[in-house]
Length: 594
Ligand code: ADP
Ligand code: ASP
Ligand code: MG
Image (cartoon, rainbow, N blue to C red; front, side, top):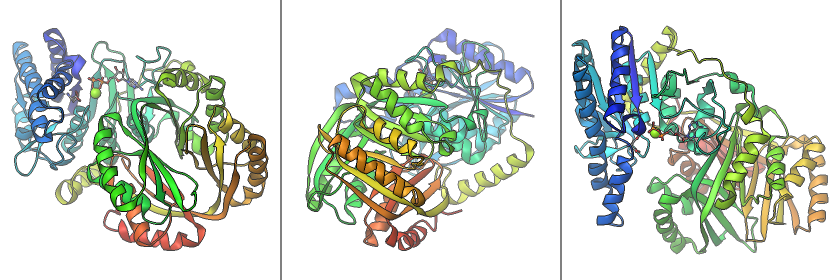
């Protein structure tokens, strides 16, 4: 009998009528001959209310107790849902994470799933029950209740779909599906019929809160097609799959993370190991760091800047202080009024001119970019929070995301038999040996074909990056990485890489632009090596970047630039150190390789 997992988010179970409506959807699927597992979130804004309550008692509540408290929200919903289904005349049993046997690690408030036992759920289903699972929670080896992080019910749903070999995983929410950007922020956003896992992973981790990014990791790893749709209507919604029609678009979506904080550490020694020493204590706290940038060295010292979610800034600062004690340096800037605007598209890896279009349109809108980082499939710019909405609207329109052709209804896709077998093997291996959410690395690679150019002390004002990269594009140069770092309120450094056979053209343009803008100097390295580790969910696995930094630090190799994405972390090192660097990375990650 086909098995369906249906997840209902907070707004979809916000009151008794909505609970009954969700119950009817599950009953309908059951009547159609499916076995049904529901995953339910806390009602409405109940989790927020519990967090507020905790803060009234204690400014920094112990994480274990937080989990004890927050898990109650989902427990209320599952019980009510089971009662609602019973009132419709069908059999239902509600289960907490612990009762299902969702085993996690002990990282309270951001736990990762190790394994899920399926016996109890399968028995209950075989007895004709609709099973209602509490989202977002699990239990560690010492029977402590854990939670998976805000929005984690999506992850529970996709993980259950994976271990149960479900035919469909439906995420019911309060919008019609995945849009080109948050439709509550930009009403002109369009529904996207199909999205690839990689694009969705990026969008979710860069602010598209419609899905918990780790749920997309599960989808990709275990080949679960995720169907996002409305609990309020029967609109077909969006399917997240391996290959989608959007894959050829340069930009298929845009996202905004409103609550970012920028931390700049000034005057740290520019020697191998610095980056590792700054980020190791942050990674220990499992804080996700993004937009790591470093300045051109001033008399052996440099500035390292990075962003963290605003809610984690206090913990991040505590961690940085401990590094500075060993390393030297000082925290020069903490800016909690910044937002990250990003565009994502698989097609941008093959097209030139995407970055300069984004920079040009932001400059025309008068938006200054404080920091820029790119990866193969995304470009992110850090801007002042007050200009974030304007920035998002501008780039969304520039890439025609408000004009995406009306979508055909998405066909609910189910897994094919071949994929189901291989997914089952992966589930089995990870459940029993490693842990379902453990890191899966599929490649460690070196690219020795590029050169690097850095313009240092560029005026920090709108339009500079746009002009530079327009002129670079006009010279026929295909830019790969772009990193704009923060030096002070007035100046920035811009680093970019390009194929070595285009270096001559690029350096001519860089020198001209440098003279035109009055920047200090053009620094370059004709021979660099880009070292990359690829896998799934790498940004949320804080250990990957830090593992790379540690391995290179141990080998005394200096890191010149970094970019991170959900599917790949790249670091640039001197060309002469490339082979040694790649050997170190292979050694460091040998156990994680498939
Ligand atoms: P749920 O409680 O169902 O899990 P969430 O609030 O977590 O719902 O997620 C749904 C919300 O995600 C929408 O109301 C919307 O505001 C927001 N959102 C952000 N980005 C996107 C996007 N790209 N597409 C659709 N919704 C988005
Ligand atoms: N109730 C939890 C939250 O609000 C989990 C979820 O809704 O996915 O974050
Ligand atoms: Mg959610």
